[in-house]
Image: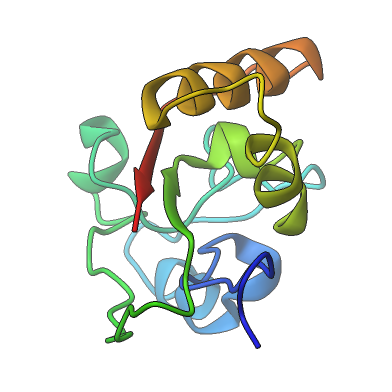
Length: 134
């Protein structure tokens, strides 16, 4: 049922998909805002992050993670961990189809190829990729 099929395990914490985060930042003193391009205070495109400390100090973004538990078993081929710079330009199923090519013999070459593909597609954000063969 799952072999070769992408299953999203995360939730994007962007203003358009997290109205509760937007409400929280607008209730601060001084209040935060989301500009027309969807950036928190005109600076960052996400409402939660582990870095970006200059936005955390006043509380505009926070690092409370979305947590879920997923049991991985023989129905799953790979676990792909990547930051938003990758997912901004590559849709969920694409990496699975891409890394199953025989030209990438191991998880390291698959991860490097995905990173280069995101860069080739014009990602201007952070690019980090880890591919785990299950």
